[in-house]
Image (tube, rainbow, N blue to C red; front, side):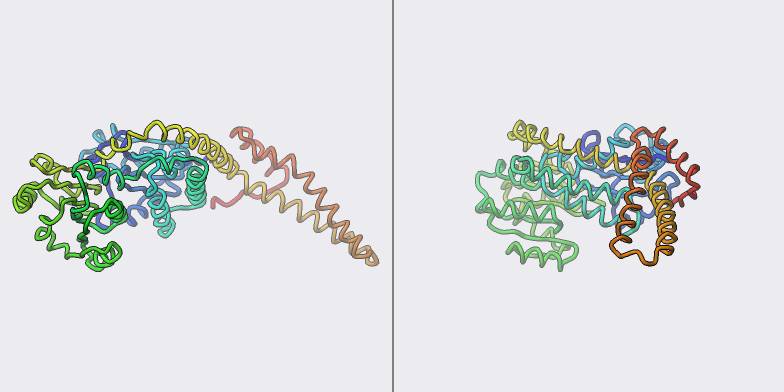
Length: 426
């Protein structure tokens, strides 16, 4: 059975933020979704990636066609628009393309802002959650860990990280365009996650005067505010403090809008119509898009950040080309490992069979040579091991054929010729 890595989902290349948020796994449904995923008949292993740019299911399967259909239905169950509407936005990566896509995501070559550093940490988190639930097995363990190594190589061997900005820093660049100066401005974080924290640190580095932190878990707001030397506020008191903020960053996992257009009209009146800059990093979105219709209020969502990094596009692309070469070589290595995976039980069984024969015959011979010195016994041991290794060299090489038809033939032949038992499905 030829197994492959398969990725099905929506990302920023083909699906806008409103489509991506329809299939997001919210309200603590993530672990349950992982457990459900591996109950699907064609899916052997599974993980879910959910960032501001993508909601993608990574799977290992022995039946790619059936798995694509199953994962499509799996995502549709979270989409109110139905199968036909979602199909036009779905991206499917199979086999080598699936491995390459995961490696490119880890190396931040598939990010909206190429080179942003957050994606690798997010990828490790999603892999960890799949591993803890038990939905990731041998193939995905290897694939994800390889992707982490690939990302490290890309950052070490290219200048892609130094020539790119993160989504958070891109948001800060937008703030610098809205306001002449940030030194007298106050920022408010709605949600105390990684993205909003990074944005706040970028803002502080640019001279923002103070930071207000609101979070549903107040202890987390207090903790982050302490780190940023800011002020924590209860989430329920948000509306009382909004007028104090010049820059508002939303990054919560709320199912509905945290800020409405009617609410912002009132806030702007309290501010005496001074400009207000809103950055919506949430998927689903935290802020009502109609807020952008209000004069002196500037709202940008995650998709709007794509143009901020255009100034360094040429340099980043040159470094990205070097990174693609690294990734292609790493994809070759992983695909060779995956191709050989089916041959491993046969190779192990064949080596065990010959080793058992070697050991048995050597022990009989040594039993009849009681007076043989220890050095000569060691020489016989080494000689018989060398004989077995030389005998095994050609069969093992043939069992690792890259041609799937030949590999399958040689596996079956080896098992019949040497009387090897069929391996467990595990």
